[in-house]
Image 1: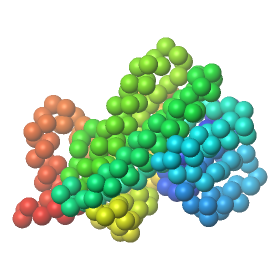
Image 2: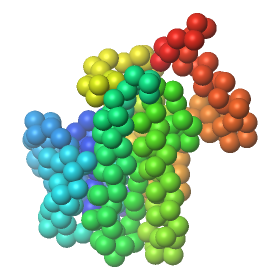
Image 3: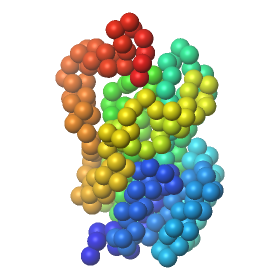
Image 4: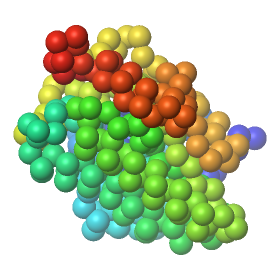
Amino acid sequence: MSFFQDKVVVITGGSDGIGKALIEALIPQGARIATCGRSHDKLYKLQMEYSHVMLHTMACDVSNEEECRRFIESTIETFGRIDILINNAGISMRALFADCDTKVTRKVMEINFLGAVYCTKYALPSILEHKGTIVGVSSTAGYRGLPGRTAYSASKFALQGWLESLRTELLHSGVNVMWVCPGFTASNIRLAALDSHGDARGETVLNESGLMTAETCAGHILRAIERRKRAIILTLLGKVTVLINKVAPRLADRLTYNHYYNKKGEFVK
């Protein structure tokens, strides 16, 4: 029998990318799933696609605490419990800090960090009762600050610091707290990334075809949940980046700069 059989799994941001891939992987394993997203149309399409299984959906902007509370409470009303919470909803940005409106930092922090805080706060009593798992989908940018992604890096540093604190608080509770750093994954996150004015860029600077698929990433996350891991970094580049940043931070500064800037000192990535 699957580890996830009959477990209630909550996934924020489940209508696209890694979130949707997690749903697609969990359904055959007998999980009961609740998910949220901002697009009514995408959630309706998801609901119709999986009308034969226990899938609870609700439109929710995770940056709104009241909407998060309603989503979590409706999940408990529907399924009676929560075993696993995967805080996956997130947004990226690409703009140099000097050019960036402060509202961009606020929006990214509210979605990537506070969204996880809100959902976890209201799900925690049930997760504690059932000795479940809390997951935060983070990034290598939560270990190493990246140019042009100041708000994104800040949100992921905050997320990982908060999760580490929470993990320590819950160390003897039976609850596992973990964070996942997928690296570059083929999804729409770069298309939806905010520009300096807070608008979606609608373009990507990467070759998406060469990136890890959302399905592969979802598989790694589910195996880590089953094994009750503390943290996982999914790419070799991510592991090397974290290691160099830890043992030789000045070298990491130079290597990161050279990756994102051309020889003329122009920001290109």
